[in-house]
Image 1 (cartoon, rainbow, N blue to C red):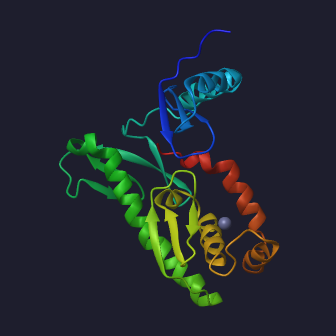
Image 2 (image 1 turned 90 degrees about the horizontal axis):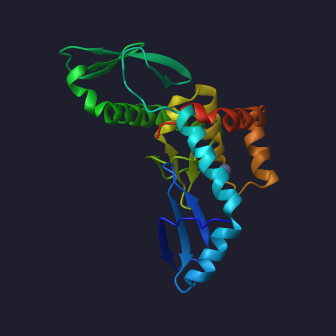
Length: 225
Ligand SMILES: [Zn+2]
């Protein structure tokens, strides 16, 4: 078996060795402070198949999610629907949405930032409204709402009752957003995924299992970076 190149070793106070294959294929090893290079090398070799598979899936992923060009006609998700972008001349504000996105050509280099800012603003307004609505309706008490940039979690609820939602959620359909909102509000009462927790979610949203399934199978659609 050929040697596997390790691109970076990050040591920390962790207890186990973990491997990360980054989107560009680099292999990063996360290791405890005192573990020897020999043990790291042996671990990496024992995971050769997994590393190869991960690299292949990263390549497939890059094909599936080609880099965004922000060229006119490219589609972007908002509340479960796709809207095209149009690159225009001399427009103020440079980024606008009216049943489609329009972007001033001079702002193209910042297109991604413009989108993220807009998504984040919409997410803040929309999620705030939905949380207030359900909290009033079902008498939930929460501290505050935070809009995060989390990539893999749609929402979370802290022990103190801060509800966090990723701005990426605003790309998904309203009924899915409602499910995530209800899910996190239910965590203000049950800080776990016990049968009692799911019972509470189900009492508000009887078909929550379908929404969960939908998210699991479709969240790749809202892949951003
Ligand atoms: Zn949960």
